[in-house]
Image (cartoon, rainbow, N blue to C red; front, top):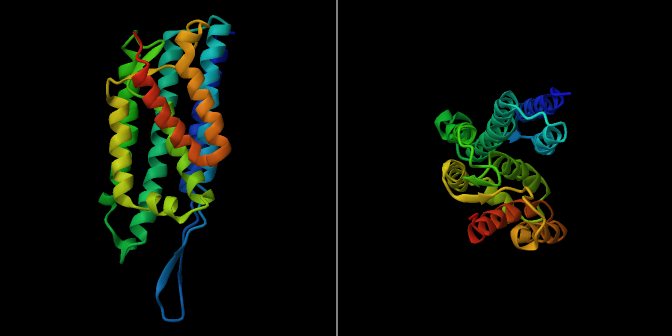
Length: 252
């Protein structure tokens, strides 16, 4: 029974690996028209990675619940959970951003011959996630509040980008996600959020009083309304609300 939570954690890792496989199988083809000019056809399948990262997030939540249910929490489980999270919410999201940067650079003149240096900043997310999780593992005070934004929150935010891109009703959002300078800013900002010491609330209930759970209730209300009105754009909206509510209702 004590290994059941670890099986959930390993399932988290499996979903992370499946997300990476989906990201790498992008189906790029280079075609030529009558004048000999080349253009790129990219029937991307990265949205499947969004699905797998989302499933990893669900499993990541459940493994802690199962561990408490069976009273099977252990130091090994804690370390295993962090290792799985690095893959599912660090490496996989990094590769999503890598592909978006690749799409952005490919649109430029002679973009196919651009240096890989332009794409490597995406890996900062994986590095920041690993650092964040290592810091979490040696800090016993982060039970009902975090220092820095949790890695799964950042991973799920980035996982929403393909869904926003391929289902956006407006070209404005698409153009933003294909602007490499915007992507660089997002990468730097999210990496900083993970390694910072900002007081961020944990989505756990220490008790059931309205006073202590008010920010969580507000966040749920925002999430429901945003999902109804904004579809996938609701994910970054909820992420921003999560940060703001955490800072306004600091853990004491």
